[in-house]
Amino acid sequence: MNTSDGKTLTVPRHVGIIMDGNGRWAERHAFARAAGHKQGAEAFRTLAYYCRDIGMDYLSVYAFSTENWKRDKLEVSAILRILEDYLIEAIEKMAREGLRMRILGDTAPLSERLKRLIGEAHSIADTYEGFTANLCVNYGGRDEILRAAKKAAESGAAFEDCLDTAGLPDPELIIRPGGEHRLSNFMLWQSAYSELYFTDTLWPDFEPADLDAAIVWYNQRERRFGGR
Ligand code: IPE
Ligand code: IPE
Ligand code: MG
Image (tube, rainbow, N blue to C red; front, side):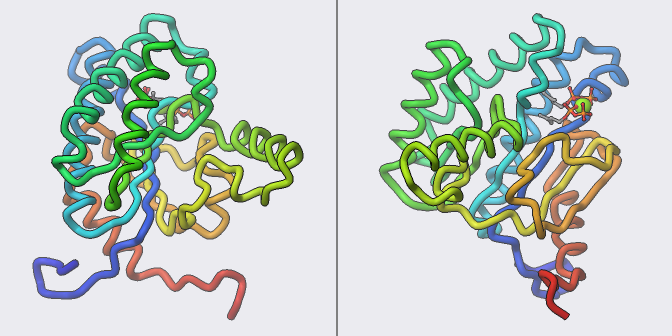
């Protein structure tokens, strides 16, 4: 990818984003929290197309954590409803748009309707190659590690092949908008050597230009992986 001043930048193969700040965005605009989540989904839609266009392979976004069930029932159902609408849209157009949508996380506690939509989206995504957007739903890094360890012990398969991210490269770059400097249980195994980028911009306000800034910053990092 090229910057406006003609420099060539390396686009990471896999970027993770902790989509935080929807609630504060809503508060600032005197809207209900659900409106913040809706605007957050719009930001995700725009960014997913942008990531596809700049040649990224995988974008993994944290949409709902294993801890987010602690929230008010109405907020949880608003988030899951937005997810349903998003999946319906993806099922309808993702093949045409050259985008694969997958869900990472423990889907067992989700509604039958959501599970059916996830199954449909996955079966479409399995029919072609190309840019993949992973939506992490009822995802928690600790939960993923425990599920994978159990599965590996039962099946004899390699541990990493039992993670939700089996077959994916580790994210080279993890971005957290919203001003907090923590992982909040996102990709604990996979982030061992990820570059961590934090910005105060709230997720619903996050635009392709903000991703460009993170990629410029990423290109300035020297990755050593414990070597010298
Ligand atoms: C992130 O935004 C979305 C989810 C965690 C589901 P928040 O809802 O956490 O927004 P803030 O942090 O309260 O602003
Ligand atoms: C992390 O945000 C989870 C998602 C973005 C889905 P939270 O808002 O849940 O994280 P904390 O509570 O600030 O650590
Ligand atoms: Mg938050």
